[in-house]
Structures are given as C-alpha cells and as structure tokens.
Image 1 (cartoon, rainbow, N blue to C red):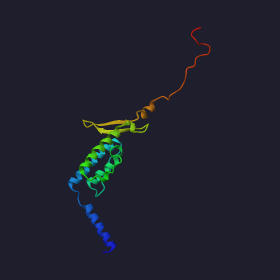
Image 2 (cartoon, helix red, strand yellow; image 1 turned 180 degrees about the horizontal axis):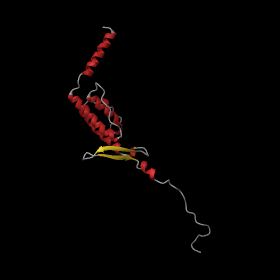
Image 3 (tube, helix red, strand yellow; image 1 turned 90 degrees about the horizontal axis):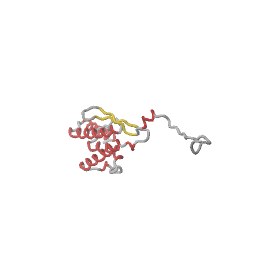
Image 4 (cartoon, rainbow, N blue to C red; image 1 turned 30 degrees about the horizontal axis):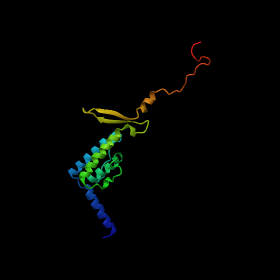
Amino acid sequence: MSEAAELRAQIAALQRKLNTPMPEAERNEIAAAQARADAVAVKFGLPGATQPIPGETGIQFRKRLLGTFKKYSPEYKSANVEMIGDPAVLKAAEETIYKDAAAAALDSSSYPPNTLRPIRERDESGRMVTRYVGDNMAWMRLFCLPSRVGRFVEPTGRRGGAQ
C-alpha cells in the first residue's frame, strides 16, 4: 500500500469517527461538565468555559476544564489532572478545584488595586443580581476630593495663653 493510500485510509477513518453521533451519556457528561465550569467562569468575569473539541471524550473534556481552574486550588495546584484515571478520583478533584476556584473568585484580596469586577448571577427567585468584588475605592475614588496636607501655625509672640 502506498503512502498516499495509507493517508487516505487514515483520513477516511477520522471522518467516520467525527461523523458518528456521540452517545447520549457522553453528551450529558460533557454538558454537565461545561455547565459546572461555566458557573465558576462567570464568577471570574469570563464569558464561559471552553467548548469541547470534536472527538474529545467526556473524561478528556472534564480534565481539560480542570486545568483552567486548578491554579486556584492549593491542593491540586501542582497536580497533573491528566494522569487521573479513576472516575471517582476525578469527581473528587472536580469538587475541590471548583469549590476553591469559586471561593477565590469572590475573595476581594485576590484582585489588584483599583479593580472592581461585576458578578452576575440569579438569586433564589430567578432575578439577575449583580454583585461587585474587588477594591471599592475603584469607583469611590472618582467622587472623592483630592487629599490635601497642611499644618497649623501659631502666630509669633502669642504663646502661653492670653496677654
């Protein structure tokens, strides 16, 4: 078989793989993982989590999403989540990483000075509520007068009380 024929066969196999419909359980796993990552991404002011790559399995997609947020988790910061093989361990890692990332997003000390970031979320009754996290002086500084420094000087010759 020539090299060109071999490449054509590989391309045809990849096209068949991409054109086959994804099983429903796999689609549901990817959708659940994306919804969970989107909820955390919104807290950081990001538009949402990334989309799955065609041909990517649910487990691969979940691991890739964890790579985005693991830097906020002290426990998993230096861990290689790609090496996790057990689904139960992956689920536990997701719980910890997403919890730590959500907490970091709401911690105002983690933002640089003069930064105020809106977080839009739904409350219990379904209304959209905007909360702000960061340095409150980022917007209040606009309404403050400039600071001035001065000192009181006593007139000369009038020390020690009334004369």
